Image (spheres, one colour):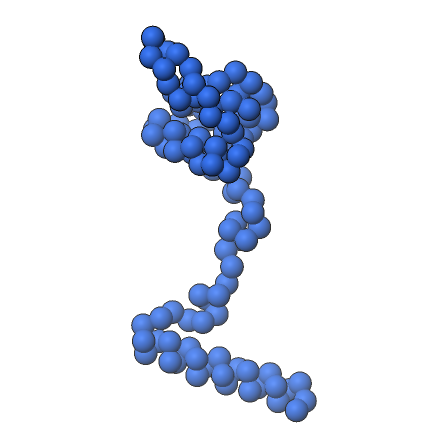
Length: 116
């Protein structure tokens, strides 16, 4: 079988597969198999909250333990968002071992903080 026949046969198979998937309610085979650029490359997109927190880490902001509230105050001018979102991003960065968990006493109460 030559290349032209092979390509033609593969296209026919793709059309048949797409028709079958549409009947069962699935999307197009080609569109469901396309990889997402950020998920496959392992990179964090440029302007995301975790990326901004990692930039702070690289600038040694986390040299001393910082709470989510302190991170929010630092990011407020460039990336305003809720403390809950920042706390979750910090927790996820900790799970990926990009930040370490620590504790800090604020107003006489022990709070979770993050350091590097």
